[in-house]
Image (tube, rainbow, N blue to C red; front, side, top):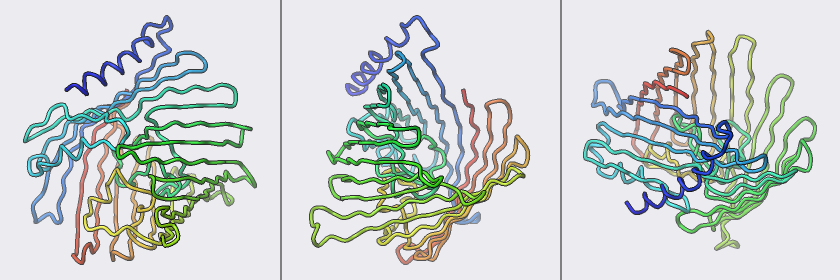
Length: 383
């Protein structure tokens, strides 16, 4: 409780001056409220696990002046259902905070439900001329590809976690310099709850119609990392990709090289449809014995892949301005398995959306044939 009071006091002290300004429009509040019912089963004839998530997000942003901006963003989630009742560690695992400062709290925890509040953005941003500095919990996205991002060494995320579009944040200091409209240089230093440091520099520029980037750094106090990425087009088809090389520093002479490279194509058609294809190579794929690792929010860019070679394809079609349908698939040869995921999105009213999503996993994990289905029904109101 003491942590909650202290953290709340810090946020209020920072936010209060923003609301005391004469220009009330300098402060913005956006967010959404969703209710999502989920069902997990291996077959319709077997047992089904039902859960519900009520999720509210609040995004505050204050424009102190032309050069200084502040943001605070909150996730408020109420979990109920079979998973909460059957797994006593579920609330504890949800409340774990990988950041340097613990800003995740289970405010209420009961055998049948629990309520979690997390601050996943809390930063100040200073921009002056060609220079920009941001300090605090923030999203740092260095990825160029659309599914797997080995360049994204600060905020690695899972493609399957579709309900967290904002992605995790990092407790970091980020310095950026923009020599021109088409180039930038960055330096980032991040610390986490284990006291590990990730620091890297990136340079991005435009050449031959492509955005090209190079990065070098030190990840989680363990690995040296070098990487490169690009995004551009071949005719009317977008072509993007990235790759990273990792090597442990503690036993550098005897350490192994971890290499991840991915490339993909995507194209938007005249009938409001889009097709996407991406391939991935990982020299040391992550060995999993639990399909829940597909959803992990603490992924490392070294363990993005579960197979030496992986392939992804997706097709979406906006049938009408209100109705969108899509299907995606992923192939894991080493697991002798695949993922398939159809989805439907429909606009019920202004700022109200309905989604029906199915995720099917079929593979061999730990020498055991595994088949899992997850069905989600979500209604989302944005404000």
